[in-house]
Image (cartoon, rainbow, N blue to C red):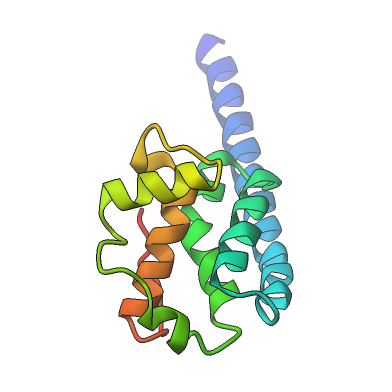
Length: 140
């Protein structure tokens, strides 16, 4: 009897988890269309703003939202040629102190760089420019 109840609870949790993941994935995919539309008119800083705004209103689960920040940045940045803007990017961009300073200036101070949406957006920009505007590195 106890094993039967445990089995039902485990099955219910599995179904709920699968449903939540599916809904989160749908939300992310649908919201990237909005980011793409914004990217047609925004400059690089505008894409960072749009991505951080996207993260704040993200309706997917937290981990998926955090992991999709580079993807959202890519969808925004790829809508225009960013060659000129990429040329003026500082070589120190990927370093922690640079990220901390710029995120603090934006009002998005990072306590832990690995878990900071602002830092993730700037790292995605750095990756986008270093890849010749072909891709961004996604951290898992």
